Amino acid sequence: MSKNVSIDWSKLGFDYMKTDLRYVSIWKDGKWDDGKLVEDNKVTISEASPALHYGQQCFEGLKAYRTKNGDIQLFRPDQNAQRLNRSCRRILMPEIPVEKFIDACMQVVKANADYVPPYGTGATLYLRPFVIGIGDNIGVKPAPEYLFSVFCLPVGPYFKGGMAPVNFTIADMDRAAPQGTGAAKVGGNYAGSLLPHENAAKKGFADCIYLDPATHTKIEEVGAANFFGITKGGAFVTPKSDSILPSITKYSLMYLAEHYLKLKVEERDCPIDALDQFSEAGACGTAAVITPIGGIDVGGKLHVFYSETEVGPVTKKLYDTLVGIQFGDVEAPEGWIYTVK
Ligand code: PLP
Ligand code: COI
Image (tube, rainbow, N blue to C red; front, top):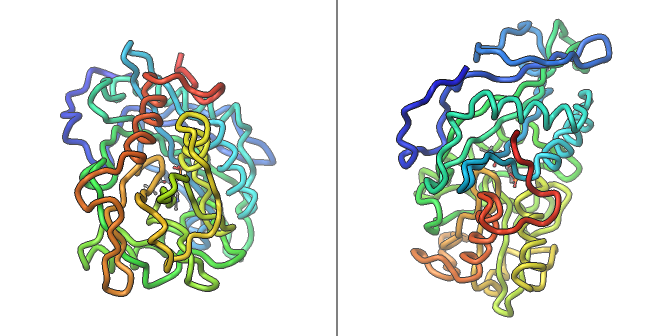
């Protein structure tokens, strides 16, 4: 079991670290087994597993937060469970009962409680649930067996600088096709994003912004995060598209913008040639939290929003509200917080 660990929480980025125990459950003969915690961080599977050849796999990302009084809480894990099941349905994998998913996350957090960063460090415990198609198979067809696992690791900011604005450029490739797998959290979407990300990074940008694959005129995603903009009139605007990953953070922010900040909220097209409508912009996601967008490079010209160095006031308020809820300092809407007991 866990021992006290010696980690400089303030130096954490988004890098892998083995923790003590992870959860594993196997689907065989039409059902999931009870699942168990294991120490080994290696997965041994058939060389012919469909996860390896045909990308039959999907994953999730959520975090555990240490509150001021030392409790540990999860943020909307039921939403991650439901999205995982939507991903599973899209690529013909068996669903995980929501209670089983939440129980697995709870078990993993409890077993690795010493790795949950202390309150006040800003760091969190990132949980990575995943489902992979395993077993002997060579034709393009669903796997005979599946593995569901959850592991965890302490993390700091995903984008260097945390709440400092960063710049993005428009991707030179698409991450998803119309009616493809863009709305599912499947590994293939991320494999396809490695090269455009590298091209953006080589030009000095934090990541790239994907436009809609059909017309290349509207913003879809910001790397592995969703986009939002604050209009000059004070509305919270975020793109609507079937090829975007439906971000739990984004839907939470839409709710908080409307009910806590009393802003108008619009989920609609965000044309790349109408960036002028926004006085602030940001990327949001579990890993990215809220990362302010300083500017977007469009065809060699940087469109700056609020500032390249300072966070805009609405973005800051949204951040404080969201993070305040996640760490237990601000009252959460009913059903958002699951205390780990
Ligand atoms: N978009 C992509 C492509 C992602 O990988 C993620 C990360 O999960 C998000 C958006 C943000 O989603 P969420 O807020 O649920 O973490
Ligand atoms: C997340 O925010 O959880 C993500 O999945 C982003 C990423 C690290 C793939």
